[in-house]
Structures are given as C-alpha cells and as structure tokens.
Image (cartoon, rainbow, N blue to C red; front, top):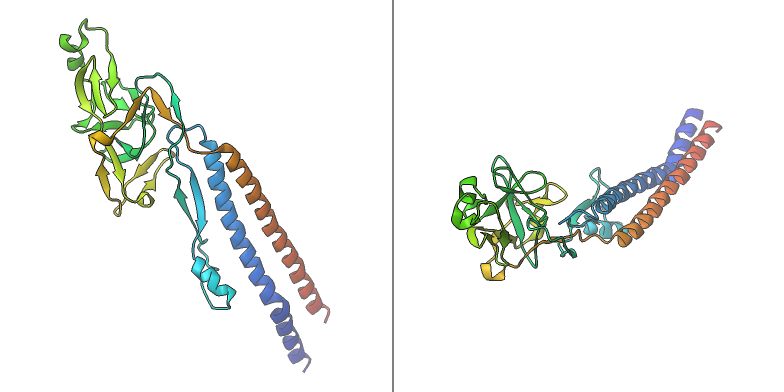
Length: 279
C-alpha cells in the first residue's frame, strides 16, 4: 500500500512539475541554440566587414506555421531535434571604393564575375580584387581564374611581345571598358562575362566571397549594353558594423534570458525531487 502511494506521489510530482519543467528546459535550450547560430552568423558578418564583395548573411526561423498552431494547442513539430533556423544572404550592393589599381573591378548593378578553379568548377563572385599571374592570367586572391566569353582571360607572353600591342615591347596599359571588353594598349584581348540569376536564394555560398550555382539556379548572362564595369574600383562589403554590433548585444541578452530560464527550471526540478526524497 505504501509502495502504491509512493508511485502515485511520484506520478503527481512529474505531472505537476516534471513534465512542465522538462518541456521548458527543452524549449529554452532549443531557443538558445537558435540564438547561438544567429550569434555565429553575426560574428562572421562583423569579421568580414572589410572583405571586398562580401554579402551579409542573416538567419530566419522556419516552421512558423507549426509555431502558430502550437499556440492553439494543436500538435506540431516546432520542437524538434533539428533547430528550426535557416540562413539567407543580402545581395544589396556595397559601397564603392576607388583604388586606381587597374586589376580592381566593380560591377555597378546586377550580376557577378564568373571565375573558375583548377578543375574547371565555376563560381560567381562580386569580389573584384584580381591579380595577374606569371602566365598572364587574371586571378582572384585565392587563385581562381577570371572567365571571358572565349574562356579564361589570358595575356599570353607571345601576345604581349607583339609590337602592335606593346609598341616598345615594355609599356603595357591594361584597360577594361564599361561593357567588359579587355584592352592592352587599345588592342582587345578578351571580354568579361557577367552572369546573373533569377533566384538568388538558389545560390550556395562556398566561401566568404564566392557562390556556387545549384540545380535550381537559373543562370543567365547579362547583355553587353547592360553591363557597367568600374575599373580601378572595388565593391566593399554591404555589412553595417554598427547594426551588427547592436544585433549582437540583443542576441546576447536573449541568450542570457534562455540561460536563466534553464537555471530556474533546474532549481524547480531539484525541489520536486527533494519533496519525493523526503516523502
């Protein structure tokens, strides 16, 4: 009889305290995990505030329909093992900065530069801080090759040795027109490709500056009359460092609030266990 009463007591303790406390512990922990993800994204934005062509990332919470249904006591799956968060990117233009470096380029308006790695994989980027290789190829800072209408743009040594191009075989003037045409001493050696996509959400970011087209990406090339390249300019990151700092402070406070909820419920659960221990 005493054993039965003890089981019934523990059932009442769990019903009145345990189930509620465990549910709140899980909910608070899940919320803290989401805030931690947002903190990491915000910190990465701040770290790349001076990275050329960087696009600010943000986080949104998924399953909002399930969350709304749960307010009306409709069973949903808002509380799941997979944190209900996802990221997206802000593709607004960053500020333009003049560098007077002939290998620095910025796209005014829509579109991306197309670059290619050593195995032929193509990427899209707004980072226009290029450099010239020993082989005459125009490369990104991490070694990807700039693509033109006829493939990789390359200033061949043989081409550069022609008198009609270099004139005195020493002076080389690289000029890139607004429509993407590449000239060496007014001799056209190639033309840049500027690509755009219909749905920016289909792009996958693979580095702080480069994006990869996925299976759902509809890639299209921008017409020459719509291209506007600024040579000697760079597009800065579109991150507003002040806004990011404010958001980080707010996220930190929300994270601390979730931690206090866990501490409070953990104390409540300890008291419930203590009541059963001395029954």
